[in-house]
Image (cartoon, rainbow, N blue to C red; front, side, top):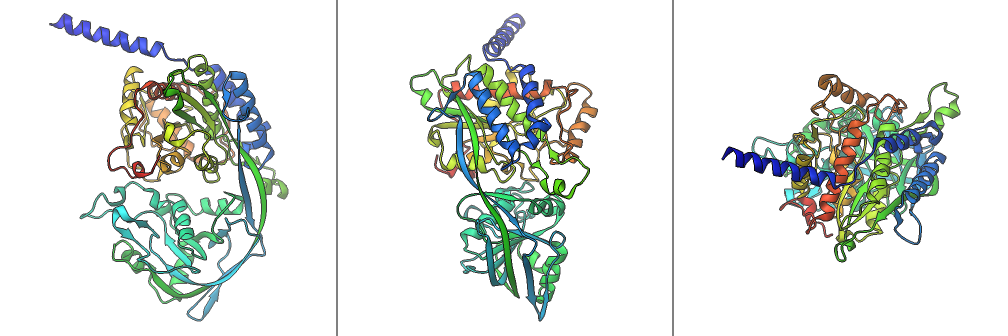
Length: 542
């Protein structure tokens, strides 16, 4: 009996090994070469609307052609997207009048704001309405607007979601952040409501990041896809919000408490806002880069698996340069996301030599750092039908520390991709990393989410940095390796995110290999991945 079990185990192991051997193998040398180039000062941080971004696009399409990827449409690897750049000018003013008092918060310290509608001048006076979390979620039986007309009014909202209670510990995903809690959703909902503008109340706890993040973001040029957008949007520092509410005769904390219930009603503050917003506007064209490996199956080749990794980062701090600062002005974005862009090139290089049954698409979206603009443009005007897109496997900010015994698949549990990931991990001798609450909404912050919103099963593979709380099981020096990963949080979106030739890229290669193996698992399967029953994104038409 024992010998039979041993024989069966041996056969299973050999079968697993043979399967692994039959898949293309990602090599470290090309990955490292692409990474070191894309993160070099020469590319000036690959900024949206900057020369470095143009260089990155040219490099990616040249490499795609050299590798042997086929262009998707009209002989080009590019998909153009129209973007509007906007930056509030210093002569802009915002003031509040409440309780007979008029005050103007200091820009950068008490308030930050801008326009996303592409208009150079925005001028209005409006009444102010507090709308709690600003959420309309029928599946949660939640509506912070209650059918009240807020057109032409300034909406003030809280960020994050309604918090779980003892009676409803799992409402709005419990401790995890849902899309309703993200600032992006808040701005989208204000636009749908026809509001004159929207301001979000910032606290470090509710936003999951300090005031410096929105303050820094609004101090630079902001980008949006051309088309509809809010005429006025921004953030209020909490002390400024308290001052406004107190002057209007309201207790902010009491209203926050009411906003935690379904019975909450919008509260019209005894306050008005006077906005005079002048913006520097420019229209630019940016490009997604994409190439394909056609499938081999006569029927399944019409369906595709997408691998994605954004090419852009924050570029050059041109304001610092103009001021003559003697500091580094280049946001190289080595980990975020030269790593993912380089990995896709290394994966494509071996995938072209061994096609799968379904078509494989290698996609480098533009403008992720400015609001996932490239992936949003793709799903709005896809170069491959969304109903024929099996999955999107995204790579963003990869493991630069070393090999692990497990792999992160946060978000895969929403669909059958989790079971597929489990099979692939087992074949590679890996475990799936344990699930942890998504407190910062990481699932909604990378390009795969654009596909998920469009109904395509998708997740960010590995997500070692976004989930980098030290739980990954590193093979070498686990404690020190985990500390290095966690320490990257201080480097994230700083000029210090630079390529280091001494990096051990074995973990990055491992992550790229897992992603490619999972892609082949999906591309060769008889059926397309499916969302789990009851999953919110499963209701979106593909």
